[in-house]
Image (cartoon, rainbow, N blue to C red):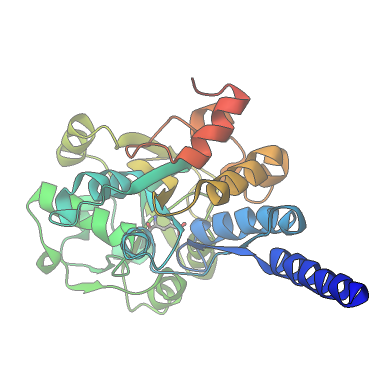
Length: 320
Ligand code: GLU
């Protein structure tokens, strides 16, 4: 009898141990197209998180998605735990403004901001496009539906009193497709709200005669003056074949966001993995080179910080 009892006690303990071990927590981070920087951000974060899975039980994956707007919608629908989103669309999703009118997400929470993303236009040299206004009557890729690029392009068009009709063609190709379509001479220009250097733009500049086009003028000045999430931005020269000099534009920041529905321990595991290994993280893409932790936890965030992120930043003394 005694032996039996011991045996069953052992069995119970063993089952408990197994189920504790099996209690893995999964995190999904929405990124962007595979030729963008968001995809690299997501893969880099998950690589660092997954190095600690044995300790934290947290497993991370970062699939390719349509981009900012798609990620914000997936977080609101609880289909994804986290996502990368432009700071302008983080603002609108949290406040229920612009294209998020009627879709205000009170549960949206910020984790940190990442690299700057200037609104970028690249045009074929033979299309003779020297400014944004020269895009009138041209064949232009205005951005993938669900992308922050497409959404911000709409803001620019609105500010100028334009619509898609101003273009001869307004295509909505994915970033991974647009370079080859332009170089096959089926488009005059492509647009991408993205960190630099970027693979899709490099591919275009290397495959056909093309250059970056400045995004400046009165309408842009007004957008920057009236909205705190926009700022003037300069794309350095020498990053892309055909563009040796710096090019003026305006832009936003990439940010990592989540929801109050996501438990604090998961968010804590993500920020700890990134900032405990920050030098390693910064080496994973040239767009991360100049990142500073203290700025990332404060700048370009309009939703409140998630409590899991706040816990780590307080421990570090980065916030009070
Ligand atoms: N900013 C773009 C968007 O929100 C994505 C850029 C990237 O994938 O790096 O859709």
